[in-house]
Length: 145
Image (tube, rainbow, N blue to C red; front, side):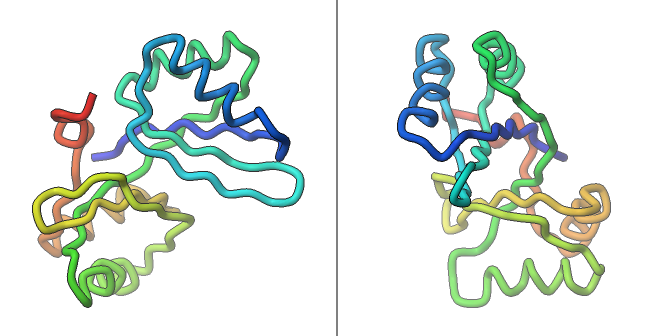
Protein backbone atom coordinates (compact mmCIF):
# COMPACT_ATOMS: atom_id res chain seq x y z
CA UNK A 1 0.00 0.00 0.00
CA UNK A 2 1.94 2.94 -1.25
CA UNK A 3 1.01 6.42 -2.38
CA UNK A 4 2.62 8.26 -5.30
CA UNK A 5 4.51 11.40 -4.31
CA UNK A 6 5.78 14.07 -6.67
CA UNK A 7 9.17 15.63 -5.94
CA UNK A 8 10.48 18.76 -7.60
CA UNK A 9 13.80 20.56 -7.24
CA UNK A 10 13.52 24.33 -7.05
CA UNK A 11 16.05 27.08 -6.94
CA UNK A 12 15.99 28.87 -3.62
CA UNK A 13 14.72 32.13 -5.14
CA UNK A 14 11.50 34.13 -4.74
CA UNK A 15 8.65 32.97 -6.96
CA UNK A 16 9.77 29.42 -7.72
CA UNK A 17 7.39 27.78 -5.27
CA UNK A 18 4.57 30.03 -6.41
CA UNK A 19 5.15 29.04 -10.04
CA UNK A 20 4.49 25.40 -9.16
CA UNK A 21 1.45 26.20 -7.03
CA UNK A 22 0.06 28.56 -9.68
CA UNK A 23 0.51 25.90 -12.39
CA UNK A 24 -1.46 23.40 -10.33
CA UNK A 25 -4.13 25.96 -9.44
CA UNK A 26 -4.65 26.88 -13.09
CA UNK A 27 -5.14 23.18 -13.88
CA UNK A 28 -7.67 22.88 -11.00
CA UNK A 29 -5.42 20.43 -9.14
CA UNK A 30 -5.53 20.48 -5.34
CA UNK A 31 -2.45 19.83 -3.22
CA UNK A 32 -3.44 17.47 -0.43
CA UNK A 33 -0.22 17.85 1.57
CA UNK A 34 3.35 18.90 1.00
CA UNK A 35 6.77 19.13 2.51
CA UNK A 36 9.62 21.40 1.54
CA UNK A 37 13.23 21.09 2.59
CA UNK A 38 15.90 23.50 1.52
CA UNK A 39 19.57 24.31 1.42
CA UNK A 40 21.18 27.63 0.54
CA UNK A 41 20.87 26.99 -3.20
CA UNK A 42 17.88 24.72 -3.81
CA UNK A 43 14.86 23.11 -2.26
CA UNK A 44 13.01 19.85 -2.65
CA UNK A 45 9.25 20.17 -2.77
CA UNK A 46 7.36 16.95 -2.09
CA UNK A 47 3.66 16.85 -2.96
CA UNK A 48 0.86 14.38 -2.45
CA UNK A 49 -1.94 15.00 -4.90
CA UNK A 50 -4.89 12.73 -5.63
CA UNK A 51 -4.62 13.50 -9.36
CA UNK A 52 -0.86 12.96 -9.37
CA UNK A 53 -0.64 11.80 -13.01
CA UNK A 54 -2.44 14.93 -14.22
CA UNK A 55 -0.25 17.07 -11.95
CA UNK A 56 2.91 15.44 -13.26
CA UNK A 57 1.81 16.06 -16.85
CA UNK A 58 1.00 19.76 -16.41
CA UNK A 59 4.16 20.42 -14.41
CA UNK A 60 6.38 18.71 -16.99
CA UNK A 61 4.62 20.65 -19.78
CA UNK A 62 5.58 23.87 -17.94
CA UNK A 63 9.23 22.77 -17.83
CA UNK A 64 9.49 21.44 -14.28
CA UNK A 65 11.46 18.27 -13.59
CA UNK A 66 9.19 15.93 -11.65
CA UNK A 67 10.22 12.71 -9.94
CA UNK A 68 7.57 10.22 -8.82
CA UNK A 69 8.30 7.96 -5.86
CA UNK A 70 6.20 5.81 -3.58
CA UNK A 71 5.69 6.68 0.06
CA UNK A 72 3.76 5.05 2.89
CA UNK A 73 1.10 6.80 4.99
CA UNK A 74 0.27 5.34 8.36
CA UNK A 75 -1.80 6.33 11.33
CA UNK A 76 0.06 7.20 14.51
CA UNK A 77 -1.85 7.44 17.75
CA UNK A 78 -1.78 11.06 18.87
CA UNK A 79 -0.59 10.49 22.42
CA UNK A 80 2.72 10.25 24.24
CA UNK A 81 4.54 7.20 22.89
CA UNK A 82 2.48 6.84 19.70
CA UNK A 83 5.39 7.77 17.45
CA UNK A 84 7.82 5.68 19.50
CA UNK A 85 5.66 2.59 18.87
CA UNK A 86 5.89 3.08 15.10
CA UNK A 87 9.64 3.66 15.31
CA UNK A 88 10.04 0.53 17.48
CA UNK A 89 8.43 -1.58 14.73
CA UNK A 90 10.72 -0.10 12.10
CA UNK A 91 13.87 -0.42 14.20
CA UNK A 92 13.15 -4.02 15.19
CA UNK A 93 12.85 -4.86 11.49
CA UNK A 94 16.02 -2.91 10.52
CA UNK A 95 14.08 -0.49 8.31
CA UNK A 96 15.67 2.86 7.61
CA UNK A 97 13.57 6.02 7.29
CA UNK A 98 14.89 8.23 4.50
CA UNK A 99 12.52 11.07 5.45
CA UNK A 100 9.06 11.68 6.84
CA UNK A 101 6.51 14.43 7.26
CA UNK A 102 3.09 14.88 8.80
CA UNK A 103 -0.13 14.98 6.85
CA UNK A 104 -2.32 18.03 7.21
CA UNK A 105 -5.33 16.24 8.66
CA UNK A 106 -6.19 13.76 11.39
CA UNK A 107 -8.12 10.52 11.33
CA UNK A 108 -10.09 10.35 14.56
CA UNK A 109 -7.57 10.30 17.41
CA UNK A 110 -4.63 9.63 15.11
CA UNK A 111 -2.24 11.77 13.16
CA UNK A 112 -1.19 10.63 9.69
CA UNK A 113 2.50 10.53 8.81
CA UNK A 114 4.13 10.01 5.42
CA UNK A 115 7.34 7.96 5.30
CA UNK A 116 9.90 7.21 2.63
CA UNK A 117 11.76 3.98 3.45
CA UNK A 118 14.80 2.27 2.04
CA UNK A 119 12.67 -0.91 1.71
CA UNK A 120 9.02 0.07 1.26
CA UNK A 121 7.58 -3.44 0.95
CA UNK A 122 9.37 -4.61 4.08
CA UNK A 123 8.18 -1.53 5.97
CA UNK A 124 4.54 -2.03 4.96
CA UNK A 125 4.67 -5.72 5.92
CA UNK A 126 6.27 -4.94 9.29
CA UNK A 127 3.78 -2.19 10.14
CA UNK A 128 0.81 -4.34 9.16
CA UNK A 129 2.16 -7.31 11.11
CA UNK A 130 2.39 -5.04 14.16
CA UNK A 131 -1.27 -4.08 13.71
CA UNK A 132 -0.54 -0.55 12.47
CA UNK A 133 -2.93 0.95 9.92
CA UNK A 134 -1.13 1.58 6.66
CA UNK A 135 -3.41 3.82 4.65
CA UNK A 136 -4.01 3.18 0.96
CA UNK A 137 -4.46 5.84 -1.68
CA UNK A 138 -8.24 5.44 -1.94
CA UNK A 139 -8.72 5.58 1.84
CA UNK A 140 -6.36 8.54 2.15
CA UNK A 141 -8.15 10.71 -0.40
CA UNK A 142 -11.74 9.96 0.71
CA UNK A 143 -13.50 13.25 1.26
CA UNK A 144 -10.39 15.41 0.69
CA UNK A 145 -10.66 16.81 -2.85
